[in-house]
Structure formats: C-alpha cells, structure tokens
Length: 398
Image (tube, rainbow, N blue to C red; front, top):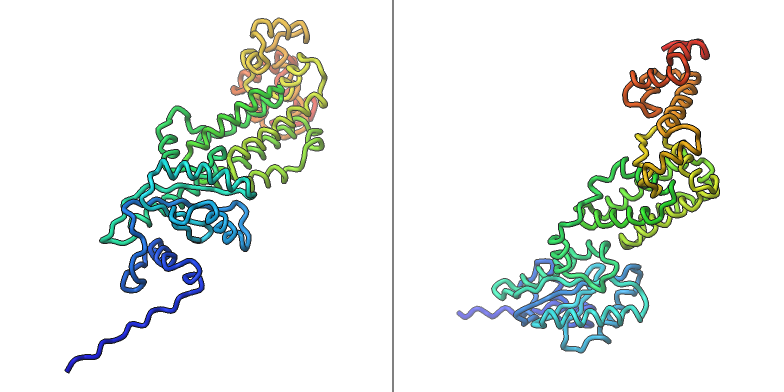
C-alpha cells in the first residue's frame, strides 16, 4: 500500500516578509545562526563574495529606521545591494561587488545622508567568501565585523565611514605611547601648572597627547569617559584650592561632566576639556596682578610645597634659568632658594601654631622630603627649632 504524501503547508508570511521580500527572513535567520533551508526555504543569496555595511543614526527615535531605509532605497539602484533592518542598524549587503567600488559608494552615501539631515555612523565589514555548504557563514562573519566596528566610531569623528583597514593602520602605528595608561596625579599637576602660567599652547598639547593615548588604549569608551571626568574633578579641585574665587567665575561642573558623558566622539570630549581648562587659565589675570614676573611669584606662592626648581620655572614661563635667577633676586631681594625656604617656613609656623600635626608631617606638607633638613632650615630662618617654637607660641609640644 502506497503511503499518502504528506503535504507541506508553507508558513504564513509575516507583514515584514510581504513588504521586504523573502530575503529578509533568510538574512535575519542567517545572521542569528538559525537558518536551515528545510525550515526557511531556498537560500536567497547567490554571490560568491559578500560584504556588509552597518548604518546607525546617532539619535534614534520611532520611525527613523524606516525613513533611513527609504533614503537608502532612493540612493542605491535596485540591483546594487540588499537593504535590511537589524536591531538598531540598517544593513546593506553587497554581493560580488569590488571593495574599492563599495568604498566609493559609501563616500557618496555619507555626503548624501549629511544633506538629508541627521548624524549617521557607517561601518564596513570585511570582504568574505560565502560557503554554500554552510549557508550564510560569510554573511554572518562580515556582519559581525561591521557591527563590532561600531564600537570604534567614538575615535573616528573625521571619517565618513570606518573599515577594518582603519584599525589595522592604528595597530601598525606604535609611535604613540598609551598616555592614558599612565594618567596620574603627576599629569594632573602638569596640567594645573600650564593653567596657572597661562600657557595655552601647552594646555592644548596636553590634550592632544592625551587623545592620542586614548586612541591607542584598550580601554572601553565608558572607562575613557570616566577617566576624563576624574581628571577634570582633580584639576578643578586643585585650582579651586589655590584660587578660591575662581569657582564663582566658571560654569558648574555638571555642564562639563554632562558633555563628557554624552558627546559622541573622543575629539569633541577633548575639545570640551581643553576649552574648560583654557577658561580657567583666562580667569587668572583677573585674580592676580598683571605683571608677568608677579605671575611667577604668584605661582611659587601657590606651589611652594611642590619640588620647585629654577629650571622648572624657566620651562614653564619660557625664561632662561640664569636670567630668571637674577630677576628673582632683583624683584624679591632674596635668591630663589631663600625665598622658597621663607615661604615653606612661614607655612610651617602656621601649622605648628594651629594644628596638632607631627613635625615630620609638617615637614612633608610644606615641601621638605627630609625632616632633619627641615629642622636646619627652620632654625636658620626662625632662630629656634620647630619644637621650641611650638612650645613658646602654642603651649604644646609633639
């Protein structure tokens, strides 16, 4: 007896399949790794080589994906490529199209989308051979590449689109060190010094170097944003302590922090931080005397606890070291080291009178690395040891 043939009832088409054709279902299942010919019908793609482009709009909103697809359909000829929505992206899939041709099309597409309004991120996946014994393997690989590249858009504001070639160039360029890996209190101190001496060129150079370091860093975008916020908090804290009136002259910290967390590109964040530091620097002439040499004196007074040297000041203020030493003596009546010891001793006297800090703690706080040396300098300038001074003026001894 012949068994009756079981009829296969085709699956009911979804609204999307009716609108976008059977290839959409093929594509979606291929990229998710669930495609089988038995379940989803014949494989729609016949190209030997495939290459995917992923496009996303910076400000997503309901209906924007459909409008983007309409724009792409207007731009491309019917047989140029396949266009599909996928997650937050619109995917363009090219079959057997040479990569130089695709890149030329993307250059033109970028200009076209820019004219239509909106901000778009475009990435080009690697060119892959399609394996027809395992339908969709090449498509899946090129799509994964293009989607992964979207995580790197943050670093490429000036590029109309990015491809794996851009990342390879970056890996080959090892001349820039990863400055972000060494971002520390010392770097914060340098930046604060440039702000205090109103050296705008060095402020800009600092952030250019920092940007290059982040560019070569393995850190995530979120971690880079966090590092930038920490740096700005430290700079604002240091500058506010040295110049309390500055806080009233600057915008609230929240504005800078919001920009760091929301701006889409690293370059925009670096520009925002540079501008904030330049504004701090521009405030300083309003808080101190106009004399250029008075600015040097002001810098020494605000940083006496740091390991200051004439060479350091010469570099910061663009003075010859010997000339600066002579000007210092003419202006203050003391040589540089005597003036610095005087500032440190005066600060130590105040701490001895008004705090319960240990002498070795005071020594370190005012800028001396060795307590014995501090004792010698203090006695030379005050005429008695720190302990005797404290006992005489505050009635207490360590």
